[in-house]
Amino acid sequence: MSNINNQKQIAISVQGATHYYKVYNEDGTVGKAIGIEGIDLDIYQGSFVALVGHNGCGKSTLAKHLNGILLPAMGKVEVFGLDTANKANIFEIRKQVGMVFQNPDNQMVASIVEEDVAFGPENLGIPQKEIVERVHKALEQVGMLEFAKRTPHKLSGGQKQRIAIAGALAIQPQVLVLDESTAMLDPQGRKEVLEVAHQLNKQGMTVVLITHFMEEVLDCDHVFVMSGGHIVDQGTPMQIFANSKLLDEVGLKAPRTVELAQKLKNAGFDVDDTTTDAKILGGAVCQNLQ
Image 1 (cartoon, one colour):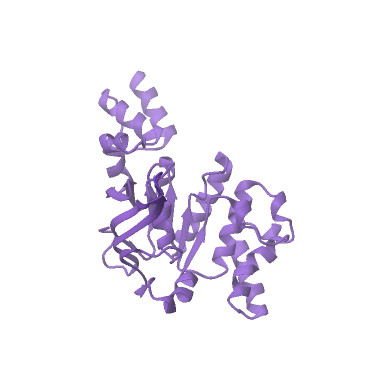
Image 2: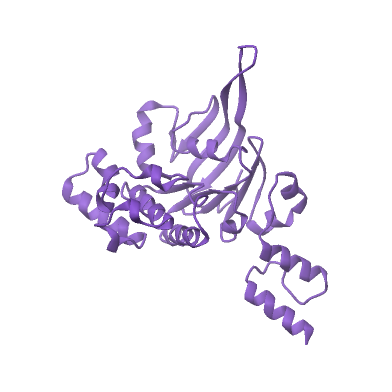
């Protein structure tokens, strides 16, 4: 299990969680395929963690267990002590864990930005005056307040995803799960979304980032590597990047800056191999060549 600051409260605890999908065989019989199997992990309140792995490794299946969209066939998932398998808990769990998915267009439900952000609180029966306050605050948190009266579908991909995050924030969750939320965005859009996520984390929000872009996990507290429905490694980003053999086995690569720092260090350059700033690395090269 994760060892992120054991003094903090556990926000989400996953204990031996297993989920299978039905598959239909050529002979007409029904079989099963592993979604996730025997997953154990703890996510601590206020942390920023990442789940990484290639497509089909189970990370999105696991993400959907974190707020009860999917339920484990075996094992248990608890959100602030509430068991997701107990139907009586689901309403409260989904208030505590906000989800943002891959395609921002699929998450838009209204023709005006502020109405879209208000959708969640309205479904919770929040009084209108409070909804207005929540929408204003949520848009302010993601830097999109000036777009409140705009049409969502005319915004850029990164802006749409920030609106989707605002919609999740308007429910006032304690945990934000970004399930491949940057996968369909251009580099600028990805940067915008990640900046919002880190800013929210600095304000106390627990963030779970599901991604296959390894450079996105550089500033995370803890990383879980998934393959074949299992967690095959975990640790700080630099601990994960150092295990190049495992990364190769699961189809991942360390960020280019990390690879460059390691190669420079091995070549005898005066470089800290944990440095990930390209300018610092370039400066080190110039100094060594003088």
